[in-house]
Image (cartoon, rainbow, N blue to C red; front, top):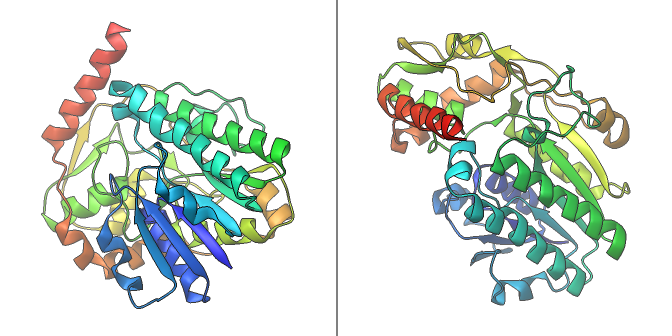
Length: 330
């Protein structure tokens, strides 16, 4: 089988690429390395059936030719995080919407059979019901959430119109080894681990009692794999653990270090909690890694995090102040 993985040098993408190669598939990775890293792919250099293309999918180019005779496309390439999307909405639209359109047009051109899209649970905004189902009202308050949702809508539309078997996976709070450490509003585990190694205080937003549905990256990769093999067409599924855990509990499991509390940021939910009954029923998928086991994996791999930049309380407070100023001006 020949697979295309956009964003394949990123956090989730690199794990997916490694899994695909382990079963002797041919894999083409397309990544512009704006957030992805070569280091994420260092473990798979031994595989001969990988082709890495450094390219920006938001722009037409020679990368398109690699879609010829592809069996499935995993589309994970995107810009993430809320605050940068507020400051640079055009950049996010170009990457997450125009980039997705280019991928879909290329799939159409080369008659690719199926596509799995990495969507975001941020499309729900602050849900009114928990656990949150796929039919919950969409509330894309910030540009990041909007552009990811627009990408999903494009995928589903192109899927129906041009016969591409499309599945969109709305991901909830993915964590694991290789998680991003840059961005104060993105990878909480990456930030905490960098702070742990540098013996800096953990920066906790609000009182730390807010809860999140944390899903380990290997479970997420499994969801992508089963989705690519499914006969279901043009479907949307939540991908989460089906459980919630507080930020304070995460710090307890990580251990060590003091805590610095910073103001709660507006527009952030107190809880994220995925209803995963639909994907369990349709795709026979279920999460397997508990939060305790997942954090143990992270701590066992802690050498990886020694290269991580440290987000101090001062830096995070400055970014939070910028957010408040933006909302006030609006």
